[in-house]
Image 1 (cartoon, rainbow, N blue to C red):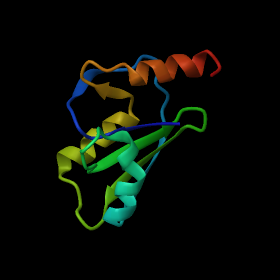
Image 2: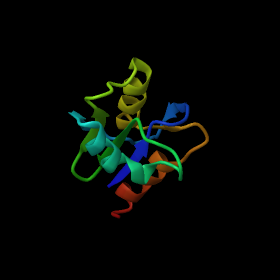
Image 3: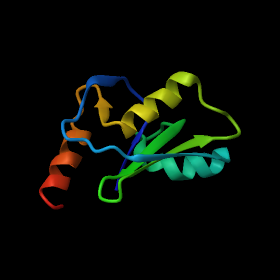
Image 4: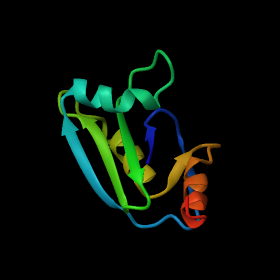
Length: 104
């Protein structure tokens, strides 16, 4: 499983071979969202949302704060991660697809 936090701009290219995932959006307390997403943010940063995907299971879970609902741009950013879009200059999604096809 791999996750990404909403923190920077997404690239405009989708990882080739990215599968269609079942997306579930979770609106939980801010504390639960922070606990879930903090591991994906840089030191000293506070998460506002994150996406966790499992390509083998075909799922993508998005974690939002119900206490502080995200702006539309943040929600769209996380949904785009579930569609295979990476952060600008990133290769996490491409690497995940390659690992999937390599059997790992």
